[in-house]
Length: 180
Picture 1 (spheres, helix red, strand yellow):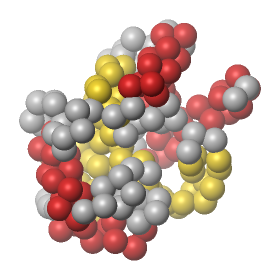
Picture 2: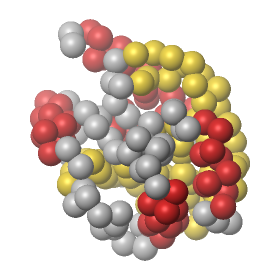
Picture 3: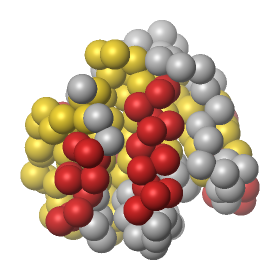
């Protein structure tokens, strides 16, 4: 992918994150971050006063993400290699925002029990006033009910053009949830 295209994607992702509520000084967990479509822009927004945790199970994509972060001069991203277990190795109530973009669906978590366990882990690491931001691609109809059943309540919904698979623009919606 050309550098101009990457810059365009990063700029668009940064606009999306600002709309959904990512701000300077916040602590963000990008769960299932992949190549960093939203990680790098989040790190730019939160600045040095904030921090971004980039969690993924694919070491190769995390290597590429961290290479891009270094190249961009971003030192506020911490890589978290997922162990394959549904456990987020962060302190209780240590995160302001969890991004769950195009990962909360039956392809990655085919069993409802696993999605429920994931939501429990997210609930545990989120601060009381933090929020969970979800792009429920592939599971639009079930996602909202499952998340609300896991002690969250829908606070806002944002319909906009999103980035899918680190390369495509498409219409979608972001759902922001708060802890009950």
